[in-house]
Image (cartoon, rainbow over all chains, first blue to last red; front, side, top):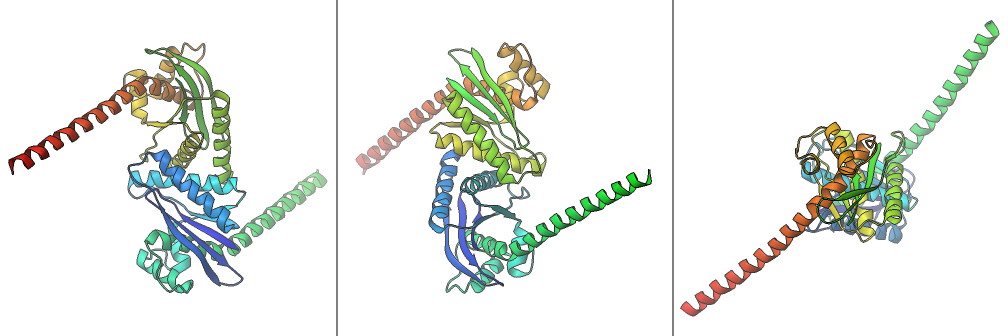
Length: 188
Length: 188
């Protein structure tokens, strides 16, 4: 499974492509950061980020796009731009016919370092180690994009099993309700 | 000038088209609300909103798209979805080659009612009156989209004059600095 991880942003948007195979084996394919100038109008910045995401989708052909879920607990102005960029990335992935998955920062940190409150440096160190890179990816947004892609490789099988279990449990619940209704009719 | 006003959102996204002519004369062309189901995956909701915005741009041929500037002071979950939708709208407007303008809720309220802290009902009443509509547009998101478009019609000439004044003042400042530098060279 090839995953395009995106750490959305306007000033810096991290992009990382990772191939995951059975077990926990992962391989880095590409990583970069798209930058847009803060003095450009917002729509120009979104155009630039969008164009680069589309180029990466065409170039690397990922099976799925994993995006960091944005929270508004930090700087309000930054978060709005980040959310707008994440909306654009999700739209373009969906338009390319790709499934989109969102992971929270703590899910990513927990998957990669084993610790949901790990620092940026710790995430970069583990990403470098897990992917067997000669150098640590810089800036942190590049490492975060790879971490997101790794997180998706490792969480996806579990999320699939959970989704299948949910379908199975819904079926069982439906069958149970049908049996109860049949019993009620028989008792009348 | 034909303006497409967008009150961005996922559950309800207001769309309103207004024609503005010289002075304060404005005319309603179309208004509607796009709804997407809260249980759909986020990317499906963004796809639906984006498709409708593109359809309106093709159908009504606006000269500019005016979008409500999102703040994160309210409900965090809702605001993130609203910001993501606004990013998608700005991207698609820019891809259609249209200029994009953002107005804050208080700029819109001040333009339409004369009061930046006006309530939703007051905005709807003034929109209905200003556009000479037989009925008040419902829900509030529809009225808000028309209010945004009206606000843009009325603010755009002033914003243009301000932008021109800024260019002129930058030129004067540059000429002044050049004269000072020449005087300094002559004095050496």
